[in-house]
Image (tube, rainbow, N blue to C red; front, side, top):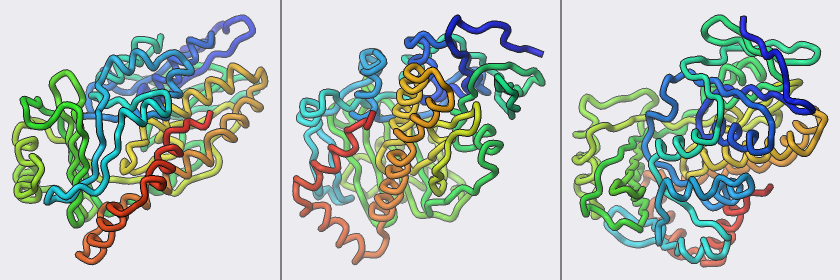
Length: 384
């Protein structure tokens, strides 16, 4: 049995389940705050899978508070404009990302998810790979994490950053059902080779389908697609199915799909928000606490905000209970609000009926700039 035998003088030892974006950000931030931390990750190569991600302004502002923004910026690229359009190429909304970066003090950065993991991993310290946290027990002055190799390790706090199917969450809150959105998704990364501009991101809307294009630097482009579909459905040939959906679109969807060797298909789920993320010496963050649909591109960003808020609470409050209370006060309502906003945006964007889709497109196209700017400001504020 493995146990922690000593703690830093006057400090804490934090155990983290999961080396995803939230877990690695937490580990890196804690180390910079002088707090000992060990991360356990079930995969042997953290971050090896995945496609693209946008680290939005709120997350970049949070990363700047712990000195990680420069490394993340270097791992990706900064788009000039963000567009919403129709399948036929009609522009519905065009956001000047450069002006937004100047207004809010940080850009949004698009990148390959693997590069983000590597940037965070470089500062995360001890990451034990091939080991999952499968459960825990609390004792008077410590928490003991049970690992997948039948050993145990003790610390002052266990943080469940182990994703949508979190074992830590299941023990803390009980098994709560996933909420299927009604649509599935595909993601891929390919060489750009002149297929799309290097500094323009586009999300194009059809009826019950969407296609997004996100250049991520280093000569690569990330794309994603959605379609209303029964939960668990699969196509015999995913490439062929996507070409049948998007081959006639104004945007180069067909060329991007054809240029992609490995396509990831994932049904889109979230959970009904909860108001308690902590108990005793255990806390949740990221998808383990508040899984959300990807419609606002905020899943990883909200995990980063959680990690920075938890670090600041732990470093600013000597009493653990007070620190966790401060963490929940700063993050629960804010993150749950984004869960709800993202779910509602998905309903709008996935409009299937011709009348609903026409009304949606008209609403977005005619929305006053002040409304769009207010929404952008709300999302750009890390609230920390």
